[in-house]
Length: 199
Image (cartoon, rainbow, N blue to C red):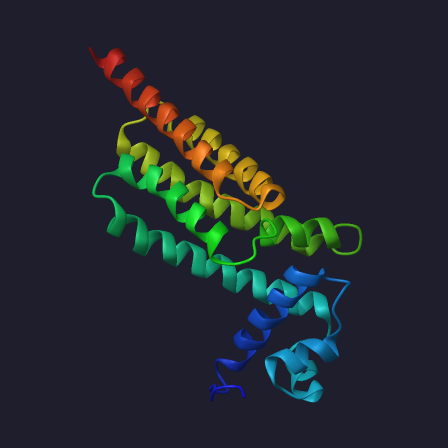
């Protein structure tokens, strides 16, 4: 039975449950009736907050993006004291996520692939989310002393995207661990380049 949820928190609860169902079964593979059942709300309540499935997915993705940014800002400093260490710790965090639950790939990329033909909003949300992550990584790269923080952030984000896609296929954290090792080399080289240019 659903735990007591305040009226204020109910839309986010429904969106989170709905997004998870769409992640597991595909946006077109799950209906609103099943989402209502999983969220333990009536269909009337569901439709009062979300007139269609795409609006639910969009709300779920926005909330997920907010949680990810909040988590990075909270957990990375707990895992490492230096900006360099925090950049490396990002891959440790991702590897743990891959193993924590059945991992089927990036929520945002999957939703974009399944809705791109019918609704560009999800694609724009994914672009927004990826830019937010890039900006967080770029800030750390700058603080770590990278000669070109934008370049390093782009390289690390490409590693993240490739590692998550590979992890979805392999069902292991090995691709993320390998990406982390590669990231460490890139970070150290970027910082070394700065030191050499200032020598």
